[in-house]
Image 1: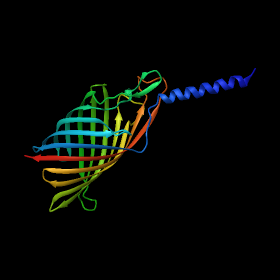
Image 2: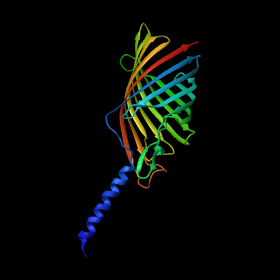
Image 3: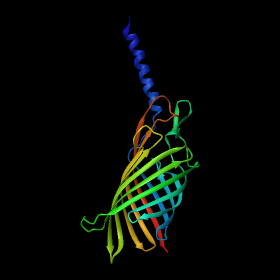
Image 4: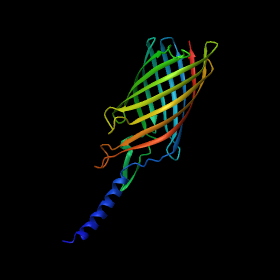
Length: 255
């Protein structure tokens, strides 16, 4: 039996198979810098705090303007150390695992979701505690817990974001907030991994005056794209990483 004659076709078949499988896996460019911005109106009625926020993001290697959203809702202070909230978000440009598709034979690409409108329902609980034993005493530890339900694809997710903030005061009024946070995004009924996104980030908030705050953030984001029900039989989990620079203008108004 000519084993060499069988070996060469087997190797060629393996190479072709690897190439086809690779076409099914989303590309993950490195060294990407994304930019995002937000503006928020925060109303303070004592225990009841309505919020309206606009957000937009330039993302991908080509820095296309993809994601944008409008969020509205309110927080309710249940305790001096606990706020809970409920919000409604309408968004366009969000990207999901099912958006990696094969529109033509052997050519895979991301769906252009910039004109696709999605609705997200959000519940939020954010306990916070002042850490007076730390030097300076103006330290606050908080954990934001946010449940999200996307009505477009019936996806449920949970975001857990612990963070530590130092308040720099001037004449007993806040001048700067310096924060370090770590966001963990957990898919509850989709995905192949424990986290579909995680990111450490630093932020600085400058209190220009009582009604205008300026924000600068820097994050290192990791998104894990994984195979879905609409994917081919080959499974995958690939990581997309990007540096994210954010700018914000906040308008708190007290009554």
